[in-house]
Length: 249
Image 1 (cartoon, rainbow, N blue to C red):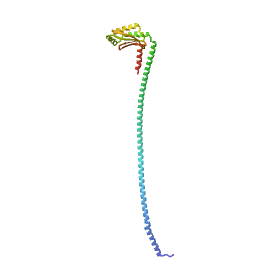
Image 2 (spheres, rainbow, N blue to C red; image 1 turned 90 degrees about the vertical axis):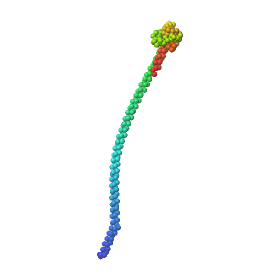
Image 3 (cartoon, one colour; image 1 turned 180 degrees about the vertical axis):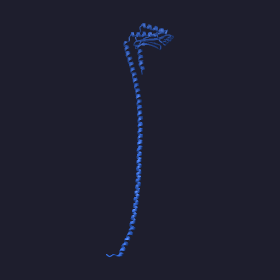
Image 4 (cartoon, rainbow, N blue to C red; image 1 turned 45 degrees about the vertical axis):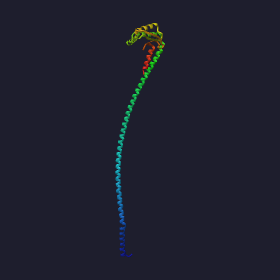
């Protein structure tokens, strides 16, 4: 193969033209694309770093906030427990006070009920005693017992209180003083005479004595002088016994 100088220079010229074309149309745009791509990557990396720093800042802020929240939660829990303990203590003290009040009220109620029961028992015992005494006295009542009671009344007429004696003396201003003498059994004449003598001595006036028989007296006598009533009989004593039972309420 023969070397051609012209062809050689032409090939060189063509190669230079190819280099210029490549430099002009391919290599330069490729460098610009690479540079643009590099700037985009650098920008992306910078944004990523910024985002990472912001994320780390947010993470630190979140951790600080979480730690603060834990402290606040613990403080709130401690305060709540203290309030619960204080309220529990208050309610417990109130409950103890209420129970003590109820205990005292119950003791007062029980004491009152025991006192009422005792009084009712005493009252019932007195009534039963009066009833038993009435039955016993009705069985043992006799003219002899009535005579003894009448004699006792005659003796008591001599020792009447001054107020009673003064009141009886005032009756002498009346023309006739009615006197009713009641007895469970007919009074013997001897006792009638003794009674009339005593009454005449006390009243010192004209008296009109009437005698009545009253079996409800059981034994003994009752003397009615106006609004005055003198008793020496078993019915009156038993009535006083029953009144004593009624006064116990």
